[in-house]
Amino acid sequence: MRSPHIGVFDSGFGGLTVLRALLGHIPHACYTFLGDTARLPYGSKSRRTIAHYASQAAQFLVEKQGAEYLVIACNTASALALDSIQQAVPVPVLGVVEPGAEAARAASKTGDVLVIATAATVQSHAYATACREQGLRALEKACPLLVPLVEEGWTEHPVTRQVIDVYLSELRAEAQAEGLQYDALVLGCTHYPLIRSLLEQAVTPGVRVIDSAEATAEAAMRLFGQDGEARPSTAQVRCFATDSVEKFERLGSRFLGRPTGKVELVDLDG
Ligand code: DGL
Image (cartoon, rainbow, N blue to C red; front, side, top):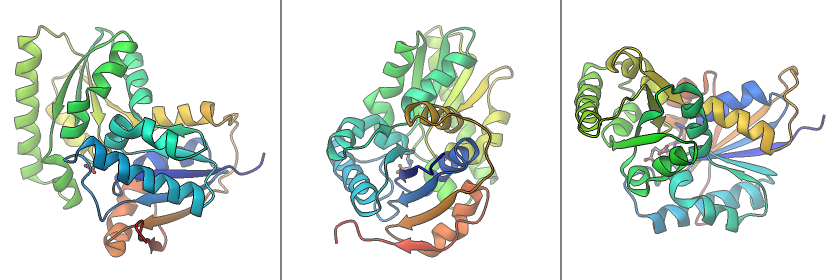
């Protein structure tokens, strides 16, 4: 089978967790990853700005790099700009929200789930809508302090643990007030898988933590016509960032689970 060229986009390097899952499922593809680190965070910006930035990034991957398929690993861009991206490029585009909701449906027995995400993602209610389409009730909560803590590399820091405890206790109280019998917590942000173990320790026992990366990689196989047959890994990965190439190389390997290789700097306005 020929190697497909898959472009993967995130506002930063958190989306490398999605690339990692893609490498496991489609190991013979060529990957070009773009992290828009100069303009991160997207999660505190307006829909218009996010759509503009994400469309520029998609055009870079398709028009300049020749990607034949796109995976939008960024939850915020998937939630607020998937339509704009699809209009901006002539290739199949997959976001992470719907696969995340499908994974939640597969995990939840009660039909009630919690979702944590950036402020923009929560305001869009994209997860609540996608979950409703899966027959689930979802309660969403913005956790804006978690992205900077992960960016700082504080993935096991006591401060991060405390912040998680505050957010989750507020969420529990809201869920109780609404009578939700939740049994799953969806990680609706690229950065949260890096603090997964802290989140797992903080949730009520019996609540499953759901990460959309695996579900997205499975959806990519279906949408991009890959047969899922086990193949040796011949993947090639090329990474671009719009800022802080050294930081991307240093921290990115944690998200990717292997070295990122030399990261190239790109100016999307240039
Ligand atoms: N990539 C974003 C997301 O998954 C998190 C970082 C940001 O706010 O840009 O929502």
